[in-house]
Amino acid sequence: MTKSPEAIRASAFVLIAVGTVGLLANEFVFHWGGTATLWFAVSNAVGLVVLGLVYLNKRKRQGI
Image (cartoon, rainbow, N blue to C red; front, side, top):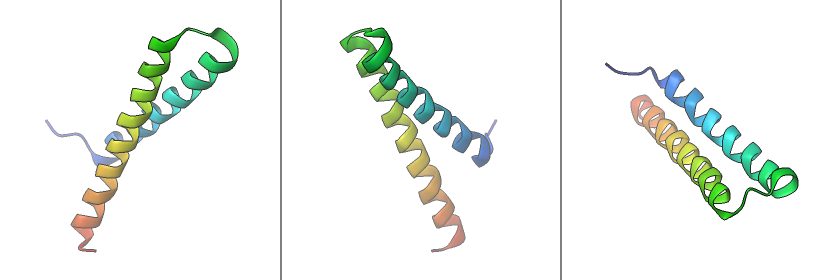
């Protein structure tokens, strides 16, 4: 079973959004601590990596 590139791209944006909102909420509102900061930062990093891989795969398929 393969996922469409649009679904993978959308999940990358969701990971980035969750990570960003979580980091901001942790910093300014909730003060959950270092573990939450790491989890939200990892969410951002994974989202960015997935988005980059989707972008590179798209360029590769287009022959650029």
